[in-house]
Length: 88
Image (cartoon, rainbow, N blue to C red; front, side):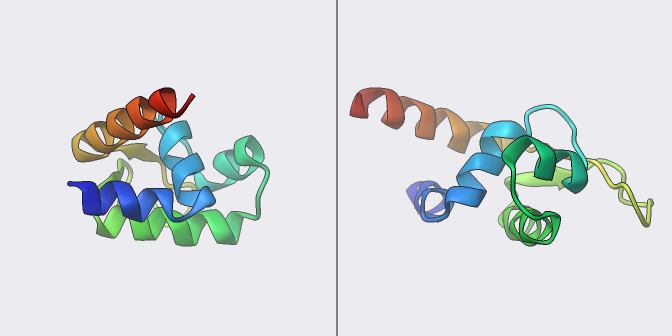
């Protein structure tokens, strides 16, 4: 499990994504929230999806797909939040 925590923490974009995708969002919406290029976020979303931390909830759509954190992603996010709080 800590391999996934490390994977997320190694990238500011991945960490930001997992913290902001508890509610469903499109990559375009996330780019506005996180203030980064959509292509960068799309790539990071795919990385998180391959690890099972994010899931596409509209897989049949060609454009405007919505993504949301998975149950596994929630567990990783909780560990990250606890570690960040302890660091303060």
